Length: 157
Image (cartoon, rainbow, N blue to C red; front, side, top):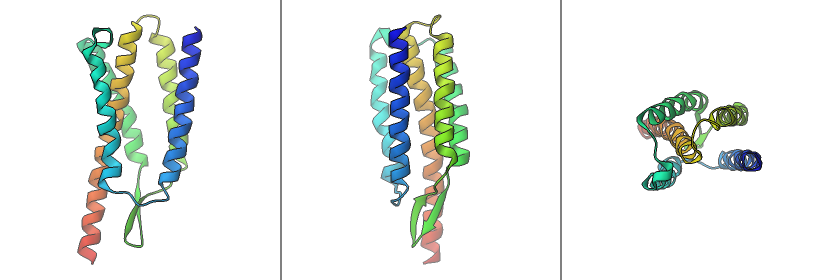
C-alpha cells in the first residue's frame, strides 16, 4: 500500500514537471527535433522487455496500445500551432494541464483497479506501453501538422 501511494505521488509530481516544461516550451519556436526527440528517448525504455519480469501477453499489449491510442487522440485534437514572425509555436492551451491531470487520474484509477490482479512487472510494462502508445501518435500528428505549416510558410515567401 505504501508503494502504491508513493508511486501515485511520484506520478503526480512528474505530471506537474511535464506541465511546467510544456508551458515554458510554448515560449519558443518548435522544430522537428523538439517534436520527435521525446518519443525517441522514451523508446529506450522498451529495453525493459528484455527482462522476463516486464514481459506482456498479446492481450495486455493490445489493451495497452488501444488505451494509449485513445488517450493520444485527446492530445492530438487539442494541440495546435500558431505562426508568429515566420516562426512556428505550439499554441497555448488552457485545456492541456486539465487533460494531462485527467489522464493521470484515469491512469491512477486503472492502476488501483487492475493492480491487484496483474503482476507488478506486467503492470509496469503495460503502463510504459500505454504511455508510449499515447506519445508516439501524438508527436507524429504534431510533426505532420508542423511540416504542413512549414511548407505553407515556404510557399508564402
